[in-house]
Image (cartoon, rainbow, N blue to C red; front, side, top):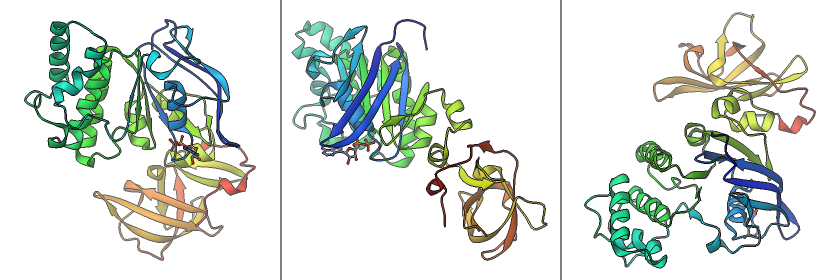
Length: 332
Ligand code: ADP
């Protein structure tokens, strides 16, 4: 992140569907060139936030400031914001080249400049050879690359990406993520990327913000967000076990759990399911108090079976306070 004036400021933004609040006083600043990831479960308000920033939804309170200018009253096409969805909205009867050239033509830029820019984007997104194809003759990943090129060609100030890889095959996803990140970083375009996929979010973001029920947690670099979950809900969403220990709630990552047969662990638990995932040992357990525990990796020793009773030990935990809301503790 640079220290320059933020590219985007979202100030006290609240939104509702009818009487149902969806965003609650969201505050966020996106720096010049920043790749920001908004991470949260389905229904937490991520799309609504993007739609408010783009001008497609009217918030009930708050402001959207782009480059120091309040754009809250401006229609979407005057905000210089590019929006990309899970399913790319390409023109089916135009070629790849024509799809990418669409916005520059509308902007009445000189033909030679348009040809040069579209050619540059085709090279940047590795679409050479596809120029004359129609979108129907492309794979899902290629269509998303065309959609990104088309969004960039409009020269937006900021790009909003709403679950852009949700319908992409898993083998291609990692490659496409890295590619999008590379292209937007190379061009220095700020982006807000929305996803419910924690791995995707933690991999991509310069900074990450977790959104639950329309409330944005304090944002930070992905390592910090992962290492220091701020509450039971964030911890569970990030893949931690949330357990009660000595009257406190603690977050314990499944890879920090070790299963012991000797009584020197934190609590006794029964193995409900055990097996391997991608060559790694994994087990689901339930404690006598009914807490569900997941364990993964070398701490799950060979020779254990469903129904075995073991002691649970952990190397590292994050304190989550006294957990005054007991419903937040997952039970089997
Ligand atoms: P996310 O993108 O995190 O999945 P959304 O912003 O799509 O969340 O939705 C947030 C909440 O707003 C959900 O409870 C959803 O049911 C509600 N919502 C979204 N779109 C509409 C709509 N068109 N009409 C009524 N409620 C909606």
